Length: 233
Length: 91
Image (tube, rainbow over all chains, first blue to last red; front, side):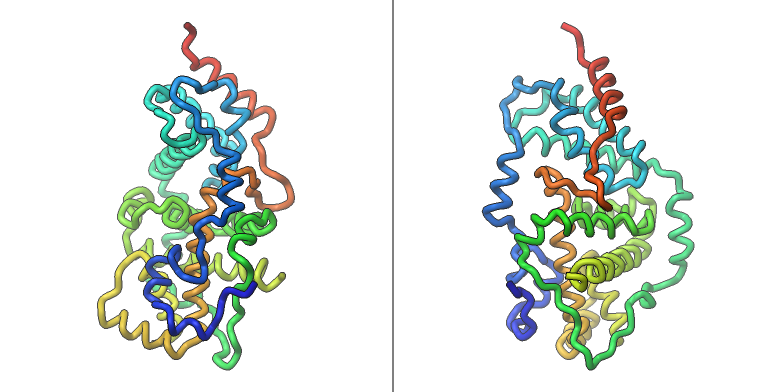
């Protein structure tokens, strides 16, 4: 199904496309029925007092580990984050009333652990990327295009795309290819939805740095996805 | 407005509202430049995809780069389990 229709642009509010992509008419990313069914099957809402923590590692270990790997490069660090998450969860289990699925709650704890890890990071990790930024405005990274050629469109049905294992492999591969500061900023902003101000505090960068980093990260990801998925299929 | 600047502003607008004047010039550029329009669409799709990446972990779809499915190594699994066992208060 072709969903990106060029002439329909003029009818849609472009501001919406920029500010509220999730509501953009022809990319309705609210999960379709199949995806909701998959999520329901795999989450495990139980009431308070019924949690068997001996099964946690078996049931949730891999999922938490994968989530952590999306955010940090180092396998050992990811393992430690997962371990810390379980330990904190064990301490705080009384406070968990079961209003969400157990895994959702665990992921929430993991997100906080990741943020703390980023906060504590040694400045050298990001320093190399930041000195490279210097006074750049990020104008140089947009590739020159011929104005007489039509741009490549991203085709595909959203639901099918999001359920496609191969697509996620490519996406994760692209995120892996980003420099560390870009990966952290992008994942905090787009995956976790953290506000710009908060990210600046966590990563200890200025707002201008952040905008340039996000611009570069998005452009790199866009190119990577286009080359490795949308053009290749 | 050159496309390089437009691309940068499109990205910046998501995080930092633009002043009125820049916004107008950007909209005008988008009217006549199909490349920047396409870029704008793609960035919106990218945001959508990324915001779902977190959720996808909740399902069983293994998100992994490369060819392997990513799981905790046996050694890591045991280590974490031991740490948990030590922490469980004995009744």
